[in-house]
Length: 587
Image (cartoon, rainbow, N blue to C red):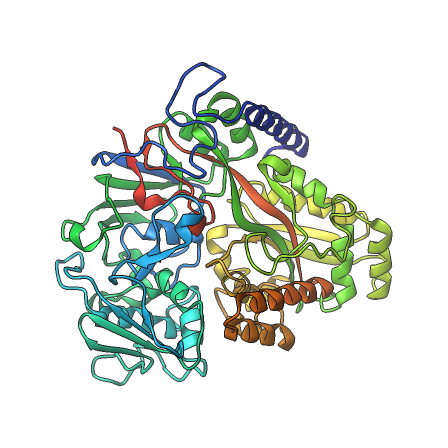
């Protein structure tokens, strides 16, 4: 692990190099060595780099963290959602275009977006002709319904988002397909399949984001005869252009062509590579080195290079990097059920004692790491405001020790207290940031024990209230990006008490606030975007006033793209990551 001094020095070098590049205009050529690679620094932010229709070759990913789950109804990692489209399709998906244009929903399995009834409660889809599974059998509306029904089997199918379930069956009346007593196991009344080409959704009440839910992998079909329950992640059955050839959890994944996929039924995916490989290695610095040496093409996690990797990439290969503004917020969840964080003043003490500028420096500085955060919502989401009750921006991120000590007195802990903080070992800079926070809080008597965890296991560790209590965790450092670009799509899993689950819980603070829950209900029910925005702004204020959840960085990444990649661009729909299904290789 790099020392904090080396981290700070590396961040300064990256910032200096990026400022120099920006001053030169960030053109399409490598001005440092005179070569023209046809791309250039930041070239893939808003346009396609190396457009090509050439097929063949092997697309090689490397990552420090494995996919959370290859079961479409169980995955909740954004990078898995992006990658899963190689072998999983949904009724609608995001457009395959650079930048903000990718946020548009277009038909995937369906011929287009839904026909929506005047009252906003009925969504009807027509499937494309020629849809097939990897065994060549026809993919029908019943497969779509069955796949979605699996979300209800929460004792087996854990970890994924619950939006569809909450919307279609808010009272939880359907037991899931494994306990379904109907003959065909298709007893969920809210979804109708009048014929093999038609899917109809009946909502109890309108939800303007409903099609966004269906674009997630949770809306994907599963062939009932191939469903292996909790083991489905080991060998998901493909509806896309590739299928799983082999997988070693935590080590590797290989996809090969699905010869029964029909291009005529899939106008979006070009399916250019012959093979796609993923290698998982926890050695982050070595991963960056091998990317730059050409052994691999792309970081599958999409969370940016390490500090040392950034320095080398920007100084020596800046024509192959992009400084991507993501929609992610890096934050610390303050666990309300862990004493003394059940007291609002003890939570406020953490806000005042934190050196946000110091955490920013550890993460790479403002240019490479991101701006200091003051809002629970990222700037791209309606709900963000410049509200700053703790003066974080006013004091330029520096701590206010006097107010921290005053807050400790108010909460009955004048000498401080002890707590445990989790950080993921396979997220660049997270453990370093946690250790920096440990040192900062220690200055006011808050003694923090940092517990590094494997990020691939976080849904069953920090995502389990039972485990959090057993291990004595009081704080969780992690990050979050929107499931889709609305206040609901970003905030409901984080702040709504009805989204606290035994496993796969992302309301890590365990916030149970009826006012927050009602705000979600009111904003979701509103047909006026301006009214919904105002409600989310009020929610932001309440969450900050209660010191429920501490954001500290609006994340930026230095991302590597191999010179041999084709069709590379940053997709807003995937939080700034490259659009994986469009990629090809030149050799």
